[in-house]
Amino acid sequence: DQQVKQNSPSLSVQEGRISILNCDYTNSMFDYFLWYKKYPAEGPTFLISISSIKDKNEDGRFTVFLNKSAKHLSLHIVPSQPGDSAVYFCAAADNDYKLSFGAGTTVTVRA
Amino acid sequence: NAGVTQTPKFQVLKTGQSMTLQCAQDMNHNSMYWYRQDPGMGLRLIYYSASEGTTDKGEVPNGYNVSRLNKREFSLRLESAAPSQTSVYFCASTTSFYEQYFGPGTRLTVT
Image 1 (spheres, chains in turn cyan, orange):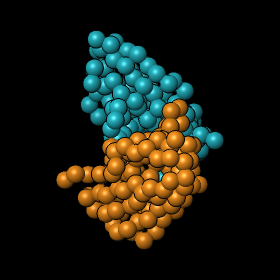
Image 2 (tube, helix red, strand yellow):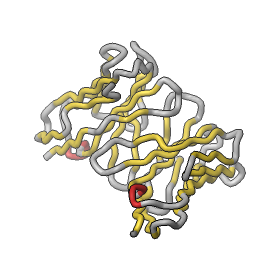
Image 3 (cartoon, rainbow over the protein chains, first blue to last red):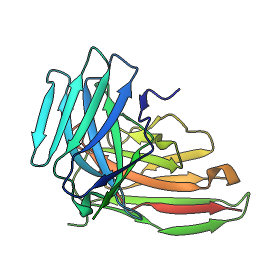
Image 4 (tube, chains in turn yellow, blue):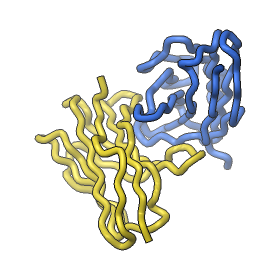
């Protein structure tokens, strides 16, 4: 049973607008959350992370929000750029050496 | 500094054949991982090695074996390939417990 869920397989957004990607998790032991970005024919690359003791982390155009009571996190990309078109994976860790990944959301930024 | 390298990039096997996927990292990371990525499934952990000399099963270990040859290298072996093992395989490494660095992947087709 998937413990990390990304219920939107795809998202299309106009260049310059905000992209919001959502992720839900079921395991209350998860204490660290990450977002990865993946281009076709490449491996995933780390984008941004957040510890469970925080509710927001910002890095340039990327902000991750964590709502522990709802077991929900989101990634905001503002403003969206054509180079942001990729697959985004949400991942979670429960203080061991392993990550659990969601199925991914494909983002397409339209010019 | 090449990061995480994987060989081969592509491979086609017949059912029942065996092969070994190679992975090496030059970042002096302690932990290494093997994942498979299938459409709609995200990345699923096959095996991992928290440190040199140790290996453990992940979420989907059946049909695979691994060897942590030394700190740099972690190989994945398919003893008798099956069509269900058609997938893209990613190797990753980390020293920070959470932020994993991925290789470019091996696309495997079993006919």
